[in-house]
Structures are given as C-alpha cells and as structure tokens.
Length: 110
Image (cartoon, rainbow, N blue to C red; front, side, top):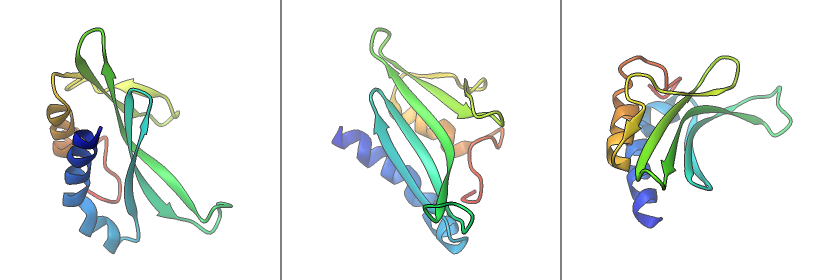
C-alpha cells in the first residue's frame, strides 16, 4: 500500500504547482481495490466550501493481475479509458493518466 501511495504522490507532485496557483488542491483516496484521483475546487455554493472534480480511477483486478483505467463522463459514470484501458503495472496506468493524450482527465491542474 505504501508503494502505491508513493507512486500516486509522485504523479500529483508534477501538477501541484499549477493546481495551487489556480486555488485547487489535488488528492487521492483508496477505495477497496481502487485508487481515485481528484481535484478539490473551492466553492461558495457548496455546503462544505469545496467540490471534488474526479480525475481518474484505477482499479486492480486481482484475478487477472492488471490495472483497469477509468475516466468520469459528463453523466457521472465511470467508463473505461479507450486509448489505454488496461495496464500491467500501476506505474503504466499512472503514466497514461499523466500523458492524458485525449485531454479527458485533468481539469484546472493541466
């Protein structure tokens, strides 16, 4: 688990300066077999004072020993990232999210 935290933290580090200059914080959470990466935007309209913009979800499929990469669509459903749906390692999955060739993942932080 610690190895995964370090890998995700390194990905977010490269976007952190741009995000903070826009008033956005980057974060991640572990949810069962998944890692969810998100941007946290300040907002006066929301009760908590912020809202989360989901960047990506990476899920480990234990039976196949690979990672699946998902993006959030406009109707708030997670769908497989068509350009690179499966990665053998977490580092490969994070690399495809970082490159964001289709510009589907990053919002303000990009």
